[in-house]
Length: 285
Image 1 (tube, rainbow, N blue to C red):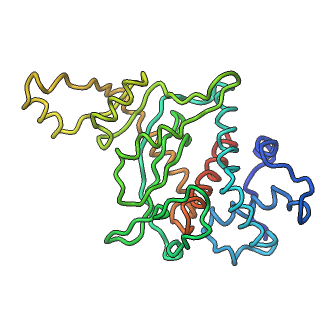
Image 2 (cartoon, rainbow, N blue to C red; image 1 turned 135 degrees about the vertical axis):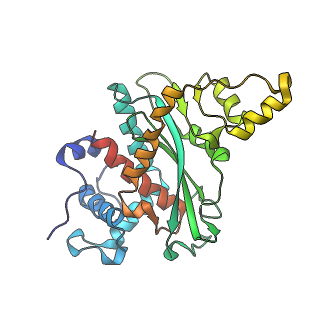
């Protein structure tokens, strides 16, 4: 029995114009994009090893090569960004943005990547960290007010949330019909892990409203310093109730077994899998 298609006809109509041309090239024409993307999506939805893809998907090597090539040249991210731009142009992107992270266990097959031949920009550690629980990767992400991902950064699992914050913010780039891409949300919602002077200053400089609670130890230290401690940061408790949008976006991503458990050896390919899941979310809106 054939697997269910990754994209409906309506979704395919949205992303087909964003994909590279299939015109003849050295070695012949590419296989049909939809067929190959369905194969890649099946692998990430189910966590199936490449060699165990059902036969009706065709060559697993061809599907993996397409995934790897488009990860290296940025095609997956370009399609994802184009869908964000279209949603924003149609007034369907909510710029009240929440940030958070989630830890993902890495399968033993994710270890052992060779340093030679890795894609440009691949981190030396391949975004893998080792702890008592084994190998892990952490996904840092931003989500719009309708529970859809806007940006991803992957790091080793032991990495802190606050140091990755500015990297996540730098990934938010939504092209506009005229002028520069939009990179500045109206509001940023974050939990106590993001309550630092550096993050609050960064948001203040950019004119972004911060809705981040202050941990008890920071509040106590400020009071202990008296007037030298400065004023307490403003905190909108009602607006903070929307922070669960990023947790719901994480739940949508983790419905896919490939992103929920990392099987990929390189961070570049794993990030491509995240973009693929996000493409499905945004094309289904």
